[in-house]
Image (tube, rainbow, N blue to C red; front, top):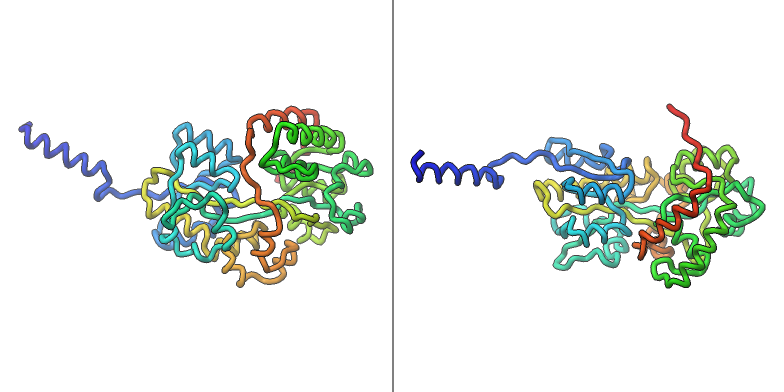
Length: 359
């Protein structure tokens, strides 16, 4: 082949390879299971007339390891306490909020979470939804705690073998630390010793350790459990069934987790990735989040369309901003690997949660 013709051919191939005129396929959303349902994708599908790819992760450690191993989704859904690790690993890039039509619908408190601002109108993390960590109790079996609203029920000898806690360190460690008077996010070595002592005292009290909503709900419904550290979703499912339950609101407030959306440092198509993020925080997605999943959407404007009965079932008021300011946001734990190792060892002797019946 003539040299000039060869160079022209190579240039044409390079141009095609750079994406000019190349059709880019649907983006990939890497997310928790409930948050790949159709309402979260609806606005994107309407705009592009295609369904995005969805891949589910079971926990953020698994998701992080998979991406470090080379998996390249376009949009991911870590929680607020986790995204800094992804940022430090160079897995994500800032998101231009001016390109999200639903951005200003989000809670003002959540839009100003410490650490998410990337400057120049960009953020590292777009808040998507939030929920709480507290204790669901059977009010007919432990009426004194329905009155006191105290988390001390976990350590009450009267209920030994009839309480449970969540298995994740991001939930349980800050929770028990707070009961000990320790800030889990700023622990000294002496503080950690105090928390470990409290955790060891907790072990004989436990029926099981589990974060499985079904196992927790079944345990509470049957009376096997009198109290379970849980997310509000567990309480809501039982309350909807008319069970005699309460979600404890101790003095000083409860813990609040916030999960969100981040964009990969190298998305296949940035416009599509941003559209997918926008779709996930849209009005239809927000209503689905609170009405069907029982988490609370960051999009607070959409809540005006949600019936009072939904809030009543969740035992939440409509003043979301005041509520968010009343508790403690879950943050990143320092020395997390060390904490995980200690917690895993401590709970090794506790019976696992019973398996849910097959459908």
